[in-house]
Every structure is written in C-alpha cells, then in structure tokens.
Length: 382
Ligand SMILES: Cc1cc2nc3c(=O)[nH]c(=O)nc-3n(C[C@H](O)[C@H](O)[C@H](O)COP(=O)(O)OP(=O)(O)OC[C@H]3O[C@@H](n4cnc5c(N)ncnc54)[C@H](O)[C@@H]3O)c2cc1C
Image 1 (spheres, rainbow, N blue to C red):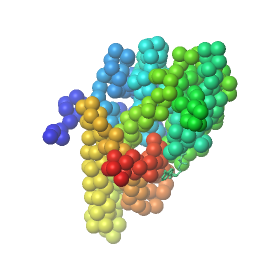
Image 2 (image 1 turned 90 degrees about the vertical axis):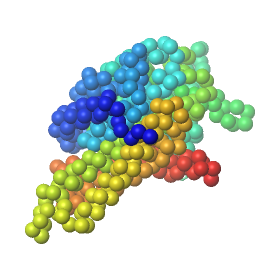
Image 3 (image 1 turned 180 degrees about the vertical axis):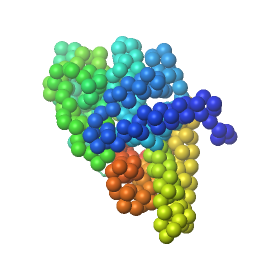
Image 4 (image 1 turned 135 degrees about the vertical axis):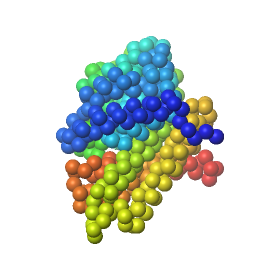
C-alpha cells in the first residue's frame, strides 16, 4: 500500500490551496453576506483548467483522475463551500451524465463549453415528491411529433439559474407500463428553451453564494435527440451519477472540517484566558485532537473511494461510507470550532460562523445520512 500522494497530486494541492487562500478567502465573507454568485471565481477556475478535472483532454477536460478531483474540492471547501459546491455540482452532476451517457452530438455541443467553465451544468433529480425516494419522479415527458414535451417541476437544483447556466439534465417519466411501472429517462434541456423556467433562489441556511432554485417545465419542447442515454435507463444512470457525486461531497466534508480545525487552532493559540492561550487547556486540546483524528480517518476513506473508482473497481459502498462519515465530521468540526471561538464563533466576521452554517447540508444533499446508511446496510447484506 502506498499512502503518499504523487508529485502531480501534491503540486495540484499546493496550487489550488494558494489560489483558494489568495483569491477566494478575501471575498468569501462578502459573497456569503451578499449572496452573490461567484462569477469571477468560476471564470478563474476555468482558466486554471479546474472546471472539468476528471474528463479527458480530448473533450476539454484536465484529463486528471478522481483523486485529483477530490483534492481540488477539498482545498476549495477548506476556504469556501459555496465555490466548492458550484464546481462540484457542475462537474459530478452537471457534466458527468453528458460525458458518461451522452451521444456524440451532445458531447460535441456541450462538453467543451462545460469543461472550460464558460457554461455551468446542472442535474435536476429532486422533485417535491421525489427526494430520498428519487424514483418517484412525477415530471412527465411525452413524445410529440419527434419532440419531448416536458411538464413538471424540480426543486433544490444547483447551478441552473445563473447567467452562465448552460443546461440541465433532468429525470422524467417517459412511459408507464400496464402495471403502473414508470419508465424513467434522462433528458437534456438547454437554458433558454421556452417553457423551462428557473424560480427565485431559495433563502438558505448556508451555501449562500451558490445558486439553488426550483425549476418548472410547462409544455417545454426539446428535440427527441435530447434524451441522454437509452430510453428507460434514467434510474440506473442517476444512481451512477450520485455514486460518483458522493466522492466530491465527501471531499467537501473533509475540506470544511480541515478549514474549521485550522481556524480553531489558530484562534486557540492567540486567545488568552486565565493568563494563558486557551490552546493550553486540556479541554480545548481534546477537541482539537479528536477533530484532527476524525479528519485523518475521513480523508483516507474519501481518497480510498476515489482510488477505487480510478482503478475501475466498485466504489459505491466506500463512497457512501465516505459521504456519511465526512458529512457528520464537517458538522462536528465546525461546531467545535465555533465553541473554541467562544462568543466570536457566533459572529459572522469569523469564518467558522459561516462554516457552521455551510456544514449541515453535507448530511442532507446528494443523499441524506439515512440514505447512505441504507446503501451501506444493503451492501452488508442486512
Ligand atoms: C442546497 C441544496 C442543493 C441541492 N442541489 C441539488 C441538485 O443540484 N440536484 C438535485 O437533484 N437535488 C439537489 N438537492 C436536493 C437534495 O439532494 C435532497 O434535498 C435530498 O436528497 C433529500 O431529499 P428531500 O429533501 O426530499 O428529503 P426527504 O426525502 O423528504 O427526507 C426527509 C427525511 O426523511 C428521511 N427519510 C426518507 N426516506 C427514508 C427512509 N427510507 N428511511 C429512513 N429515513 C428516510 C430522510 O433521510 C430525511 O431525514 C439539493 C438540496 C439542497 C438543500
């Protein structure tokens, strides 16, 4: 076993860390406070060739592996989760289905602009009646004169409503058999298609600078060849997309926890009480030690999931475990970091306050903790 990162991975990590510290950290608080989408930073991520990390160079990607992707997401989330989720949802959820299942024309039309970061991709799975029960899709797509005519709604969708949003791949019911069984397919809908509308952004607890909206489709007509992959394969496809996405979200948990620990340690060494830095108190040291240990475990699990995927091996169980572990880790680490900051931890000018708000979604999005437990228990044979 080799636990060392390659020179390429280490270089990537230091490059992205420098970028995050120099270009994201100074504006993160303002972006969060003003709930402003980080257009300039997305442009910079594109220039740094980071908006299509795991896709081949032939389609405009960086041609890197999943481990490289996890490292980048981790370094971004260490400083700002809104920027990290924008890249993460764009890559794992938005671009991935087109890369994995799209036809040649869809790949040619969309991948270069998506991987360059000129356009953002989104994935519309969740609906009012289909969250954890993602197969309970209500959105319908009917064939009419060779076109798909879509009616329905999606909710909580990331990246669909920005000025640079290019398209959304949605799940839709394309047929129902005699036994009432739904045929689910994935369909690509470009922004600007008549009948496809993005609602107002949600007022969220965190991820304030990322774009999350409800979507509605009213007699929205796209050509028949906008189906992504074979008809009826939508359920299998989105399970695959979510498996891959969990590695990215797990990396977000590791990064956020690391950022919280870094801030907590820095503060604990500066803040004095009872005549000495609070880092000298055993109660504070125990918190720092526990969180550091949990991060080490969560990072190994996340990198292992990425490694297995890069080896072409089954990674679903490990990705679910990594996502479960690191979501909880992020919540705990940010809570301890707030605690170590005392009253200042509750004040927005300290990043740990934002980290605390940003952490909670990591136990909910991309499959809740309870859904991960179901996936893991199933793999155990329970
Ligand atoms: C900021 C944000 C961004 C998002 N981005 C996207 C996106 O880009 N694309 C997208 O498609 N979706 C997105 N989502 C949706 C997200 O993936 C869902 O919210 C999540 O999967 C949970 O679904 P739900 O909200 O319907 O909760 P529900 O499924 O209603 O769950 C409610 C509670 O019941 C529990 N529960 C449900 N079923 C079971 C069960 N069988 N056993 C035990 N417990 C159960 C859940 O774990 C949860 O605790 C986003 C959500 C947010 C908040």
